[in-house]
Image (cartoon, rainbow, N blue to C red; front, top):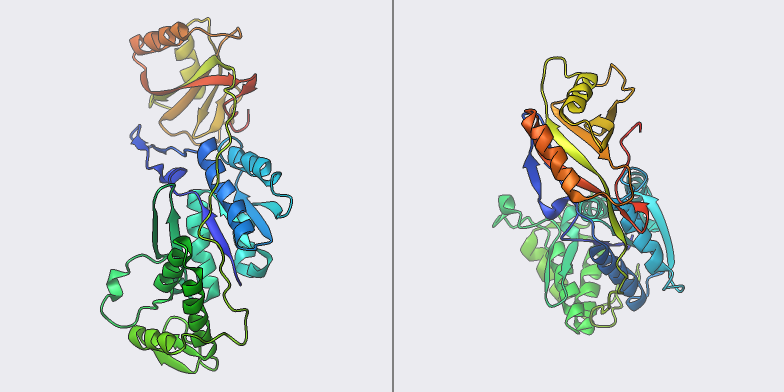
Length: 366
């Protein structure tokens, strides 16, 4: 297998924006931006072109997260059209991860969001034989950092049992990035020869396949002794270029209109009855915004909710305006009336259209 996994490294759930909003519910925000998505996707295609890769596969969960993951998929399709020399495809992340584990030879370059890529990179390393085999590169616009996928592994520090391959792979990526591909090739080919000769650390040692089980130092010495050799069973390393360069495209701003608001409540009255909450909202605020639905944990519970649906103390109440352009003052009036009625407003999300397209998702069952 020979797979490169390229993941976004600042956004998604790893943005770290979390809030406890009620006794029972914590919210984690998933941030996906067009510039962040385009940067990593364009990097993936430029990487594929620079290093002779044949295909780029995008993995998302946009069958569920149609806006967030949907944006990433949409940008992928837009960028892919600019690279007709490179094959491209999209896979849903769950089956994509299964295929990575079962048929890694079907993949070449994978580009995905932060969390998915974090998981996929460990799967790929483990399928190859060990988490200790893989290196990683964190590439920024003005700086780059290179490290082993497995992190610092302090639990085995100083024991001479760690597989140095991950750190070595990170180092060769760094050498290519700074314009020394020939040095990187020399090191990688020596490493491949060492593996071919059956000299393996404990995490990759296999009875009947390996010839010698060695520690960190002995494995490193074996690589040094093979500098200048070429692997005989597989393709030798061939690096080119010195990193990847690209520019983001500029996009016209959309026409943005406020059309409603989602009001989130901490509401825990006896029975947790959505119909009772709807009546309470109607009594507190007669209009002109219309209560269109209430959801609990994303599932629609009003109108026509199912009685068997479990209710937490966290409610989303969607109010929609009657005209194209809703003045924000009406949202403030709504919040004032709800607060005066004793309802605990914990959060709001304004509902906008962008060039006439809704910028918000429907509730499950809506």
